Length: 219
Figure 1 (cartoon, one colour):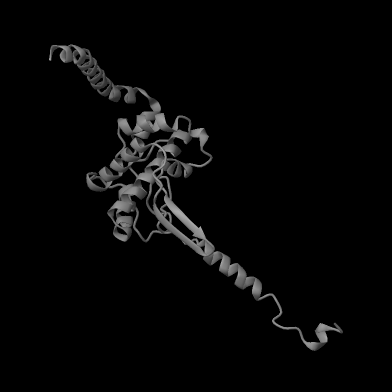
Figure 2: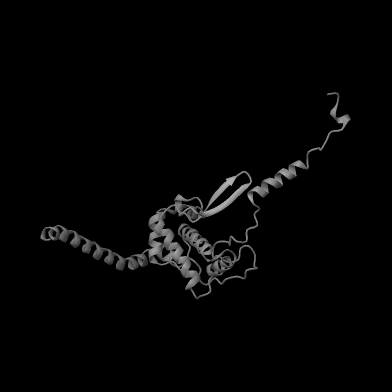
């Protein structure tokens, strides 16, 4: 109908103009990333490109907001939910809080490191050992969280990722692999409930089991 066409034609023109502007911004984004010193530093990490670097900078905004780089993983929803009650401490699915686009990009970066990257890399070696133990999807989520922590660390310290670092053997100790960060799959810290039980047992050995008649006194 001519009336309907006259009403929709301006809307279609605006939509095409918006699509053209989006395409123009996509073409300019790599050049902007190359001109930014922080982006260049973040892109030294294997699997991280200009889109992930710019999105990370836009979401985090100021690295000083976080007291520790480990907090970034929780801020982006890449840590498991916890159910704790008494001696029960169970881990569930990731929280998925925070920016969903950045979380998706970090997961894709982890997928690139594990599936496409051919060069020797300590991050890939760490993730492959984790994948053999807990499965592919969980290993990718763990690697995405590690990438977020590493990106914040490099941004805060002003350092660049060392691509020449060679992967170490799996039996090299708890700090093997993982670039600037220590591997987390070899932690030997006892469970929270286990630590509490050890404290109770240690304290109970210091108490007398039963007082003798002489020790009880006249009462």
